[in-house]
Structure formats: structure tokens, C-alpha cells
Image 1 (cartoon, rainbow, N blue to C red):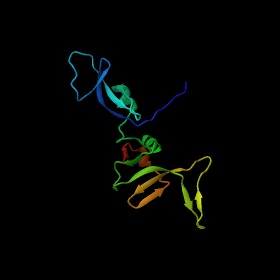
Image 2 (cartoon, rainbow, N blue to C red):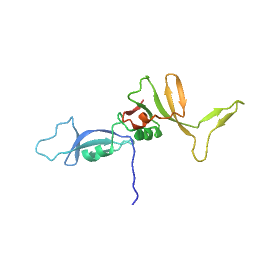
Image 3 (cartoon, rainbow, N blue to C red):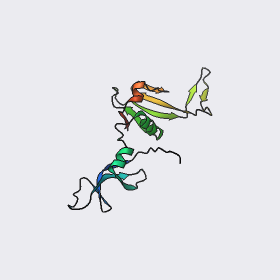
Image 4 (cartoon, one colour):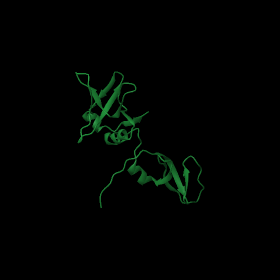
Length: 149
């Protein structure tokens, strides 16, 4: 068998499952029944499910404390990402594509290399946009990445 890893952005909240029915933890659960601890999960298409606590917590992390790898996956899904520790207000990184530039002859050159594509990370900050942003070692090893709106 092949090995797989999955990445998706979901919404979830702590919940109980009692006799197949899901209760969010804010609800009162009847006494004397078998309670399974877990999470109510809502997928991007609106489908609702329930996941056991240990399975859920092994598979998902809050988007306010992601590793760089998960943050890159979020950027590939069109999300804006940032480190919690960045000082500048409204700074973030996002995926840029359809990249072009103007040369000295004022010709617009569309970059599309058949092997490396036409995408790059763009750092958007208070002073403008930096195309081809490179993460530092500290950025790559940090676990304080988050999705920003």
C-alpha cells in the first residue's frame, strides 16, 4: 500500500456522542449514558461529522498555531498566512501566480517555466509587496503560523 497525508481546513468544536447523537459540549448530556468524547466537524462543503477526540487531535491543529508546512498548504489553498510574532500590522504572505515583469525595453515578459511553473510567495507588508519572499530558518521552524483574513 502507498502512504498518504491529508491537509484540509475544517471547522470543529468539542462535542460528545451519545448513542450515535452528537451534542456540543455546551449542551447538557443526560446522566447514566455512555459518552464518547470528541469533536463535531464541519467540512468546507457543509457536511457535518463527528470524530473521536484522540483521532481528531492527532490529525488536526488549530490554524492559529501551525507549522510552516501546514501554513504553506494553507497558502496553496488561497489563504493568507502570517507569523504571530511579526511586528508590522497587516503583514502576511500569500501565493502569487501568473507572474510577469517588465524589462528595460518596456516589454512585459510572462514567466512560465515548464519545470518550475509560475508561482511564488509574495510578502505583503506596510511598504508594499516583495515577490519571491524567502522564509528564514526561524520562520521555517516556527509553530506560530496562522491564517489571516
